[in-house]
Length: 379
Image 1 (spheres, rainbow, N blue to C red):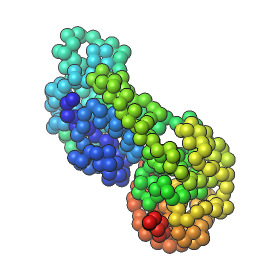
Image 2: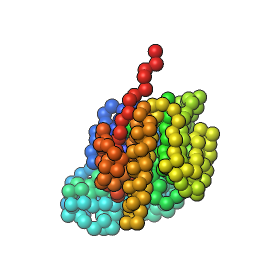
Image 3: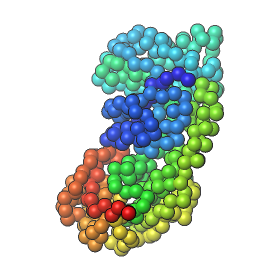
Image 4: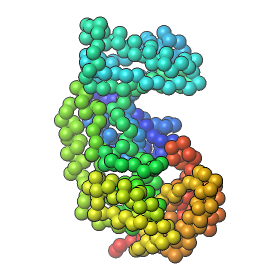
């Protein structure tokens, strides 16, 4: 199999988490850049990474990178790449684009040039002037940054946060990729209780169950690259079989979530059931002030409401004070909260032991980490 240059795209601030995941999967030549992690692999690694990465958005094949200050340079650089190795004669290949700080600033024009160049290359390979584009889908992106063009193939399709288990959504949910990152940054592991008093549609808790049972997050969905002739079908079968064999559903879990909104809890229960985790998470309709986490050395991880309207800010302040009061009642627990609230520590009642800047969508937040004692080691 040929060696491929692959890119795992990452939400802003999560690049190091994606790199750590790749290293845990056995990829050691990772290179971190803004918004992406570069690594090498082959066809089977496209399958494995789409199935296993919890915090990445997409797996891309890097087709080429070259200077492009003019349309001629963009056309010739694109035409020189081996598109025929990937795209069959009936392949559908839409072109998407972005341009930042580049002389070629018209994205539609750049998309048109790239499309034309690929057509010319495929004409040479398939000896035809007409492409029906009624076969497998290959989304190509041209990304221009400081007059350098990067061309990629998207192997993922809908972003990796779409795990395939969620049929209903609530307003402004936390993406599954971000929820997985919050868990991995925290000190939580499956042997510790986990509580989310603002669980909404249950994303953090469902991601915790997937992580706790070592379930590959992409097992319940499909990917466009499963239909690409270049990737042997048996590689996808082997990757899925490997993932099924890795499941550890005999691991006991202590996962509890509550929310004041009954509709959100209904959505959370439906999502957990769809994910095959209905009996593993205890969902309750409760205000945060009534929350009583059970057990010792647990982790409270939450994404509380942001209070974007002026009328809601007082409610958010009250909620954060409630979380601080709960923390005082649970001296062995660790508390983690993602929030854009600047005065979060003031309302919580103490300084965070750690803070980390993250972006929930386009909202700049801090991940506040109040660290309790670690559980005693078992003899």
